Image 1: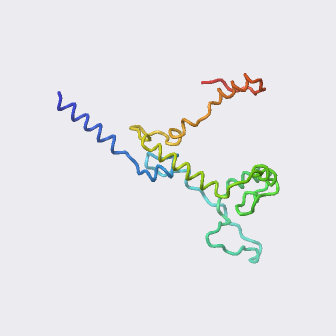
Image 2: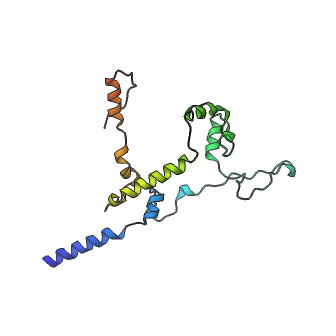
Image 3: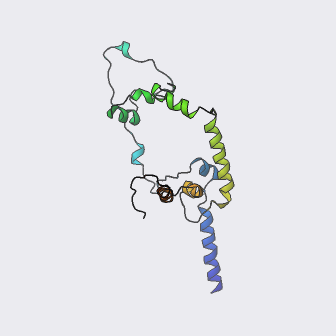
Length: 176
């Protein structure tokens, strides 16, 4: 009876160690979206837009190495155009648009750090490094939610606190 239990315990211990992933992969991809079936992912194949022949050859744009192709899909721009907006406002490198100047000026009235994204990424990496010791599980779980669980807000607690303070609040769906 005892050798059989030891064999089972050893097998369980070995299988628990077998699915450990590389920590550099875990740190760069908090949201782990996998295709466990090993089959092709049908949403990763996007057909290009149809080719269009210009009226004259002088209308052809000059080629830009590493730039975008006229037949590449642009779902965000297409959605903005369908909703009546200006898709050109989504272009990167166009600076701050005229419609956003006031909000950027208000948000940066006390100064702003030009490297805020890099600073936040470094702080986030340091936070996850400190929590790495406790970030292992036998059953795979969403790493992002587990790491930041202690920083999540309680929406119903906040709603009740606002109501107790006399703030007019909209109705909310019932708690589950």
